[in-house]
Image (tube, rainbow, N blue to C red; front, side, top):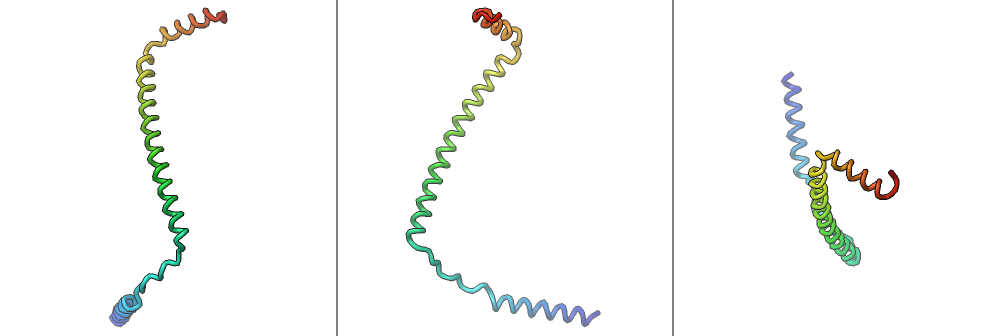
Length: 96
């Protein structure tokens, strides 16, 4: 049992030193053309502009949604009054 622990410890130490000595090494140089980099930069700028415009539209839609919810809450408890208005509109159009 002791010899198994000894071998395990020795293997662990050896693996640790092997990993440290091998390492990842330096990163290879980037072989990307300047045209590709410029196109990517322009794409990123257009995506950022689209994201800003979308954020503005979301804010506008949230404001409009809150206003509509307020209108719904204002008339939610008045079904009889609303039915009377619908009846008057139908009567005026000749459908009633």
